[in-house]
Length: 173
Image 1 (cartoon, rainbow, N blue to C red):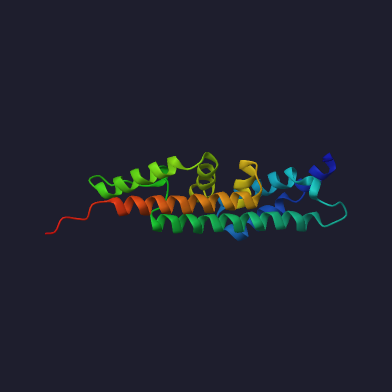
Image 2: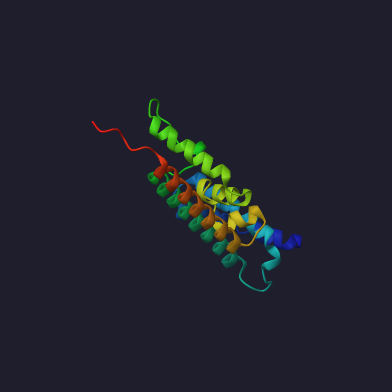
């Protein structure tokens, strides 16, 4: 990448800041979006075609980053509501043995998954990365990441359902 493209990208930072603040309505998130946009633009600069609209290309990167963040937030909310977050994000209330046992069952099931599936479910399910971001971090194709997450979720569900069916029935009153 040439330094002239670097300077051209930096010339659009004020536009990116304004757009990010308009979309996010949160200064911290807006700053994160601009930073993510600049990092992606610099990383993928070889994909930018000279003579096309750089401002539009950067705006698209920012907009997609924003939508990915919102999807991740929604996914985290759904997981929180379903109580399926990994240990680091779950709260255990004192005296609630059922929650502790469910968490223990989840940790055991999670531990039996192949390493690539544990990584995939942690990146996408727990940390909220988009499939694209997780695939980039794991060094694999997006389709591979989606497959790993799907297989991990199915395996976890099957193991947790099996553990549930092995529990003794409650004693009659």
